[in-house]
Length: 315
Image (cartoon, rainbow, N blue to C red; front, side):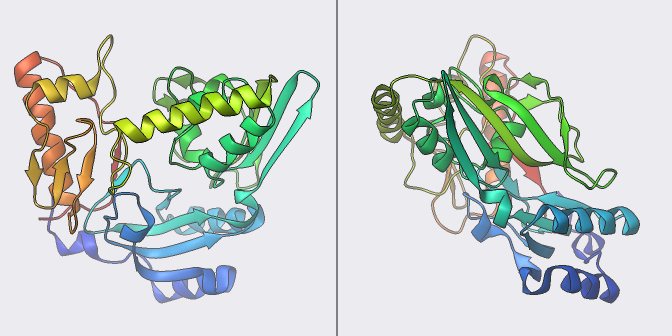
């Protein structure tokens, strides 16, 4: 963690602000707190917060970032993310408008879903289930956006990558939307760091819609019963190690109920950390480190983070 003034100083000059305002109008806000946009309800300010409505606008922003060498970060639903109390320097991009669209169609024995990167996974799974998409229940209950879920290859017994047939991205080096080939691994993919997912196509086998909806509902009920969905959190904090569960190890290490400031290891599910009210990023970061250390000391297992830490962490 750092406390240097330089880490908190905006990277944008007056010309940058004018240019951003000319591109995005009232969809850009400067020094915007990011906590309200994350599921943990934690995070300091962004130099610029920008809602982008179209692929053309995103391409123009990408060209500006390349020309000015400005850092940028795409914030989707904020459900797998801990933003530092010092915020994020540069641009924070929120995709909206055409990026939030979903189209689901039935093509013989298949269900095909076209989704923008900022579309909610909950909406995608509901629409696909109604069309009889076999396997969609394995993606039910994921609180994130389509783009974020794809980048981390989210899922349960089956993962996002099992169903993706096409991915389009944009980047500073290639601002116009273009298709790319993606390899999928456990909780990550081969997507380049500077690639912003623009839209995704998923293909499913088609089955009985009533049966698919019933299976998905059963999973959602079970998830609600076993996870602390009523409190601000970011879902599972650590990846499951091979042939084990992170939650089991954390609970066995005696960490359930541990607290740092306003953050608490959930008494209901040990791999969740809740914001009990007023938690800071430093509280959650300290708790993550404490849990990881306890599991390592007791079991010799080095838990890997599933949540992403971004921005400036300060004392």
